[in-house]
Length: 66
Image (cartoon, rainbow, N blue to C red; front, top):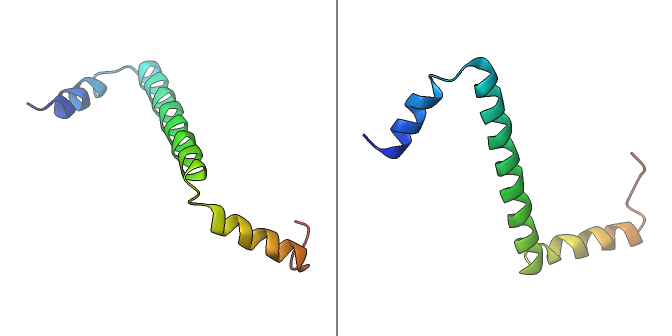
């Protein structure tokens, strides 16, 4: 049995409270990894073109309050 299958089997045995705690932990880790990837993309300049486009649109007056 693979490690993933073992983890899945154990998850199915969790109480509702334990499952909720695991779900929250999983979401927290996912958000942290997403933030780290975004920071790396910024550092690598991958978002530079989008930032320049947004600034140009703003300076050209193509923005509205939301």
